[in-house]
Length: 166
Image (cartoon, rainbow, N blue to C red; front, side, top):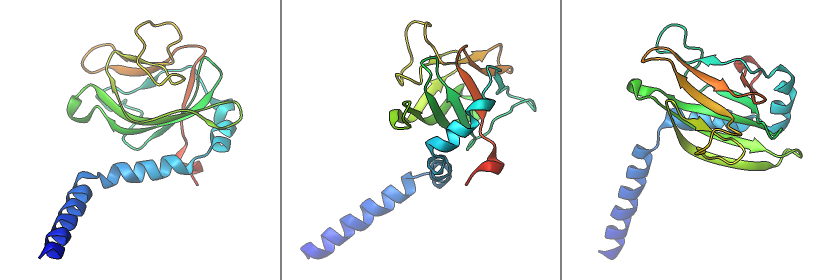
């Protein structure tokens, strides 16, 4: 009797955990973690301070699963993966990121970061700072349609070219 109750509990826990996982997000993360520091470093020469259009129209340059490479104002390289971008026009970007130190070791890493429209984010500290100084990325909303991810100089950003993924 005790054994069948324990088995039933185990099966229930496993079923609930499988249902709660989003297989799409796990696939995005698998691609994200296949990119290593050397891949990021090789792309660093192509980084730019140009904003990336995430408007709610045909101009949108990013979609769920896209990976961005960045250089922070503290001269650290990193990568982020977009798990959900403005789902149901929520004004929220869900992402994971890894910032590396000069030796290619993980300096800062977080999962499931919720980045809201009009906020700023610091990839070195992994926080939404209260002051704008040192900010790395800004979700700039012009209106309900036109929006951009803006790297603040000297921060640089680049969409990872999918054709170069391992």
